Image (cartoon, rainbow, N blue to C red; front, side, top):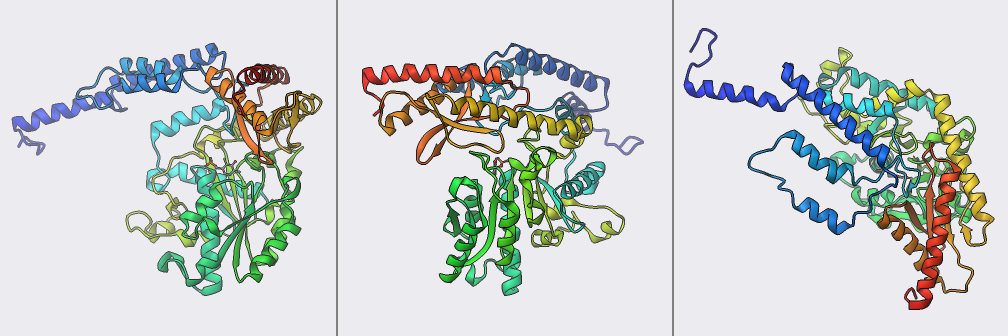
Length: 518
Ligand SMILES: *Cc1c(COP(=O)(O)O)cnc(C)c1O
């Protein structure tokens, strides 16, 4: 031992030296580490901005086979590593150059958004400091920011002082949480049965969750994971795609008459495909009259609350028991960033588990809050920092104007499509999803028209020129422009519409020659 109590053996000295060598790989307080970090940040800022400046189409068009071959050529678990510079050079070619650019106006297949610079700044802080949201002693300021931002958000959606929120990985998890709490509360209230402790009650096979036929698939997925089975989901077909209370009421009474137990209604405020929104308040009143939990899946439409012009479309959302809002869609935040809001925070008791090391009650007396109790995740990212920074910078007014622009753009494009005999518009959208199809003037079978429309989407994707969506409407294939990028202009979208038409015409002649799309 030396005088500091450290063993003076050669073996220990060698190990100690090796430990110091590990420092090269971590962010730490040495000059070398800080320098390496700054260099990497600067280099990536250059690579990324260069790519974005030079990228003239949303995708470089590399085929799935060549991407696979390039990636398979890499030794992913090498015995010895190579310099970070070399690895990043390779990554630039493999990943950066083959991205689908969310910044390009012709990237519009999904609710896949461009991101704010302010939120990218937040991402740097999130990853560098690596705060974990499960306990205050891993994330003091972060915990308070998430908690208070969540509470403020509850207020924005018209919820009262008993409400609360938790950040999630997205709409999938938020919908799951809504239905989990709905199931557990129903069981507690009707059977005095705690599912957390005892598993499903005997009557669980009669539980039913009602939603529209075009609700997100995660409703059925949640039912399955919750042990109720996908058959517990009753899907309603609504006229004009907008959900209405009369249809819901009829369905509830019908299920009751069969001896079944409707426990929850999932209303979609902004369906993924069409963006349709029903009369939320009437639906909530109807659900509550019959004792159902009302969950509003506003993953897509929730942002409208911040538009002075369009917030009326969410009227009645304050009557919900729980709401899903995705920040990584119409709030332009980097993935992942979602939130789950509940009207009565005592519902979180249904998922509270006590781990001695995580949430000792004595901490609560000190004002120390461990957020793990209201999440189904334990270790969790500080995603709340992204909207926290971005909204302070942009302000709610400007943010609302961005949404207004996208909706006006969708209205304009919808009007152009409606007036063109070679296109058919599926539905007049209340948000910014334009669903339509190419309709050749020749008489073709439904299957041929479907094949041409599917073909247009695939041709655009594989050439990298445009990433557009596809969906079904009345069992026919339709195309979709999700116009959520506030930077897009009508001229840019019109250019693409023209390309859609050109490809459609080309396919039509191929189709006639080869008779191949029947
Ligand atoms: C996107 C979406 C979801 C799923 O959300 P993720 O964030 O992708 O998990 C659920 N519901 C609706 C209406 C959506 O648009």
